[in-house]
Amino acid sequence: MITVFLPLALAVIMFSLGLSLTPSDFRRVFVLPRGVAIGLANLLAISPLLAFGVAELYSLSPELAVGLVLLGAAPGGTTANLLTHLAKGDVALSVTMTAVSSVAAVITVPLYLGLSADHFGAGDVTEDLSIVGVVIRVFLITIVPLSAGMAVRARRPERVQQLEPRFRQVALGAFLLVVAGAVIAESDKITENFTSVAAAALTLNVLAMTVSYTVARVARLENRQSTAIALELGVHNSTLAITVAAAVSTELAIPAAVYSVFMYVTAGLFARLMHRRNSATAVPATPAPAGP
Image (cartoon, rainbow, N blue to C red):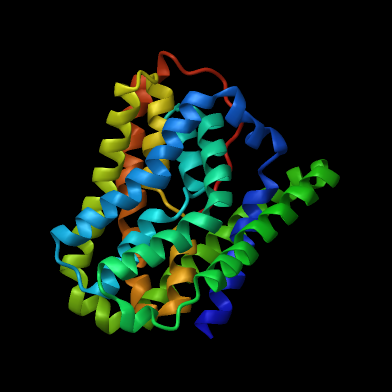
């Protein structure tokens, strides 16, 4: 039941994301190359490596460690775009990072899943795992619905503008059901490991935002861009992590489910903190998509 519903829920979320994107969101990689490059380096390399380190720090079991790395390797979530908007950050940069990282997930998620399974000795869980199969699965549940959403927007932009708020609500509902399903399915193991997993998830969340913001500032990106990058690192597409994890072992989904409890609180506090700082330099930005 879970392995059927989770991919469908993620497809709805990715379709909703596609409705909010246009080709210009991808072309912006060439318009804002420095900001996008630094942001993606944080998201696609630093975040998973931090997850490796945090899993080692808290001595998580192999399954939970792999799940944490899988979460760290997941692309940014669209709620990061909304929080960036509220924080008066660079929304265009945030949307571009979400779009590009969602496409890159076809490669990065299976890659880090395999690497973490080898590193933490989770061979008994992933012994039947086919990396090619994971790549195909991620492609079908992310790129296909995302592309479909973009195609619908291109053909019926006015209609999409009317329906988009409703799709956002549906996507949010799907996200909540995914998290609830993952928690219910592994309630006993979550209870047993909650302290260590919660500490690891919270540490990864705060550390990822802090490190990514610092890296962006050291690279001399201005506050609004640094805010967007930090929030992208704080709010992952945990639905994708849960869906891929559940296809391997539901225990792997525990870190992403627990992380979902914290990420909106910490990211929301960070957005509020940055709102005043960015107000002096903020410029009118395009509305950001909402949703998980």
